[in-house]
Length: 175
Image: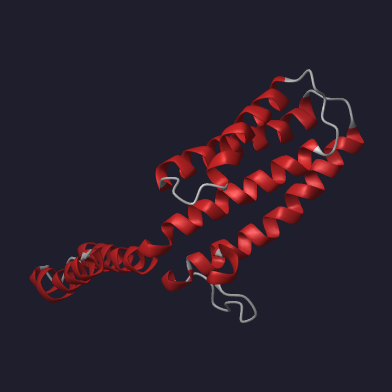
């Protein structure tokens, strides 16, 4: 049985109960850094079992956006579009493979996110089609709303959001 959760709890407890009292009380920076380190280790402990689902979410997010772009009739003779097709060819099988390793999913999502960004840039700098650029921008904005909500929920334990959502949970996004 994996004991990572117990180990991370022990690290946090050691930092707070043993290391913190050993710090010079006048060293405010060291005390603050230790508090931040302990808090982040605890955050990682809370999210550890969700990391794979989060990577799959990111892959699906960029995959849906890329497929939406392709439905807009992008210029076929474009390096940006070729890169998008290439990244999608890798992402598709990984998205449907429940046994795909987290690292491969992350790499594919990163590559697909880069290809999506390249298409957005090309729409504004290389292609002279204002309507296409507008449609791409609107798709990005619409997709970003859900991504932003998921990110707020992901980082909720750290306390950045003073008024978290009540109608959706992290599980709603990561299922």
